Length: 609
Figure 1 (cartoon, rainbow, N blue to C red):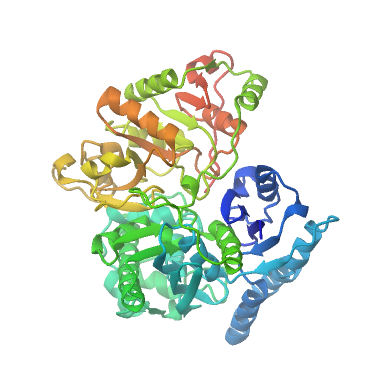
Figure 2 (figure 1 turned 180 degrees about the vertical axis):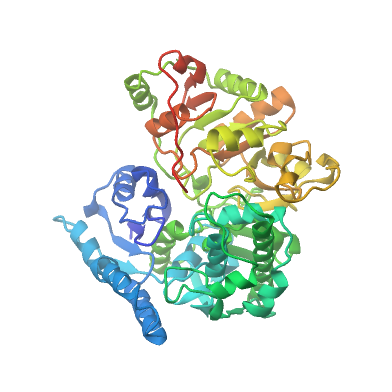
């Protein structure tokens, strides 16, 4: 099979991926085109992009792969409703209507969309966790590896242990619904006032401000954890089986009171709850990793599923030293299922896994996750001229990079849009907002004036790969996708003074890179190599040459409640509607002060998250 289209859709984070002879040609989430965060709808625009990028039409496709089996998932939901009846009668009609009208008809939908004359390719359905496992193992740089996939729920599985060897992935063990670490974490996410399926990383960022004072009572009453990492939920404390509520009043009583309402002040109780569930999550992840090593005997570990985006837990697995090397799928959530489904079908049809040449950087086959659309100078010019923007075009790359490094050194905030858009939830240097990590005020400034989000949220450093170990305890592991948290090195730490409580801890200077050092002396690190992102690497080298600092703040180019920008128009709108100082799109540079001389400053109202 030459061309395989992978699709995930109809739950959250819909996406499309195109393989050509096993190579990932294109991948994108639907939200980036529709501008609807976590868009779950059928990914029509993402599919159109993938086909255009490959230079093919639907008639050139050899197979379509869907990331899960809707009929099996429907059967699980129907069986669950029957098991708990008459509870659940309020939600049953709405849920069944959604399934019967759309989700269970996905094969018919695909057949209708790809019904043009000459299009007659087979449609395959992978199991949800098979897709996750394939997305984790096949693009990795490993010939053999243990594979852990942990999420909310697929068809029945919520956690799986698999072994990958060559072209084969074999699922060895699973934990089944309703016992789910992902659903437990999402329940506490909602309890703390954040949105399920998008606010879990906020809960992770909040955890270091609190103390795990509820962990013991949660272990005693809510979740039983076994030595092999398997677990059992006490369903008396949850509502997700029979209602729209994730939690239950019994959980409220256990956790000291009612849930937090969104956008209300953050009480210390919720910080402690966040710390407690994070501690439990890390305990389970570490025990699962140890068990995976004992069962498979492999030296390497691959991770996928939504819980694999818990980069603090990933960092704890790394620190344990159970495995020699870790690799985490950068699109670990459901979007990556589109990739895994396509790869699973491809490798079923081929003799062996194609391994990239061995290099010191352990390069994988994800192309740096830079798999989305890109825009040439002509298309950028047309957008900026239509908007009436004032801008300068640099013809020499070195001059552009020198200016950007100088602006960053002056404390300015730069919107940076270059090359192909990233696949997955992280901006990795092509759709990024950049700042100086040495600044003691930059973290607060970007949160308040540009991202319009909670003050406690940390920012990540992007750092030259060859210098990352000087600043962060990565234990020799590259972290190209910003999916591992590591402690700062003692050599850059500063005495924080008297320890404060709660959010008061935010303002203490903890290292020589204060804007990217979290309150627990850690950072979510992106190590940047010249191989995977040469332009961003050269910007970091230029900043290092001018300042001696090999790192920058790197946060996603978006504001609260909106997807990461995709097009030049998206980038321009975000730039104009925030207090960002500089916008760089390709070779074109816009300064905010020059734009404001042309038109009044627009007002901005962030979209609720």
